[in-house]
Image (cartoon, rainbow, N blue to C red; front, side):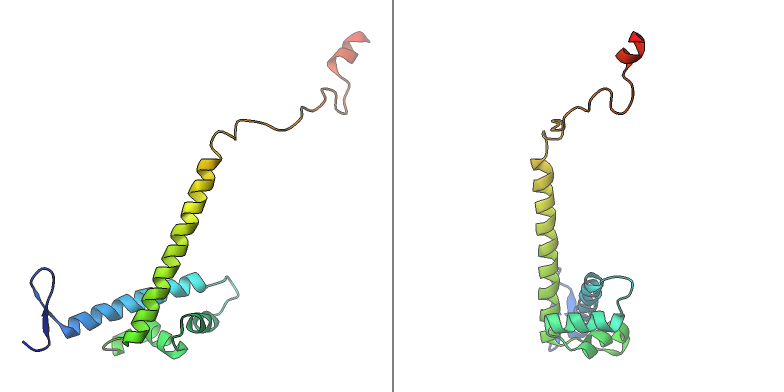
Length: 136
């Protein structure tokens, strides 16, 4: 039974299947992180990949392989998998924190939107008032 493991469901899972699952996860994390790193219209894919590689500590060529040559790969390096997973989880946590801040800000504004702090404009601003016209 060498090379076989049992999943939670009790089914046999080979190491090949597990490595392909890890490879697909790593590819999806890399794709998502690339999308988040993208800065706009003039940004080039190579520069995005370079910034991401520098930030998470994975070589740019490995990210290129994950993006374009996944079919040729049999598995993903453990260190690359771990770094991609940690970077993706960090990005998700930042997103959740921003959503919580936005929610707290939105709920904190409840009740204040009805009060006005503006002074009323004078009735005859730049025009003859109705009272002036009636008097003439």
